[in-house]
Image 1 (cartoon, rainbow, N blue to C red):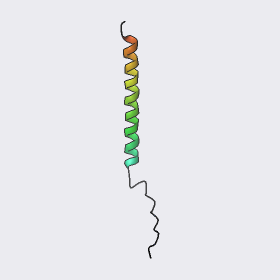
Image 2 (cartoon, rainbow, N blue to C red):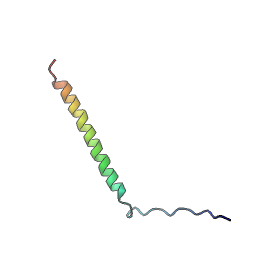
Image 3 (cartoon, rainbow, N blue to C red):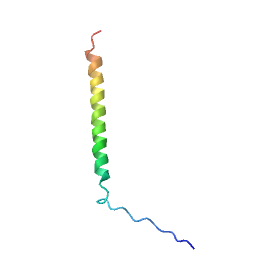
Image 4 (tube, helix red, strand yellow):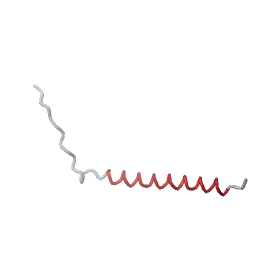
Length: 48
């Protein structure tokens, strides 16, 4: 007969990917904000 085995909780110190993911997400957000600011600047400074 099979038994139900529960998974052991993962130790957060073993997997440092969370910190790398947060850093990458922060860089992506900064890049997006910079791109949007550049587009707004381009539209406002464009001579008509």
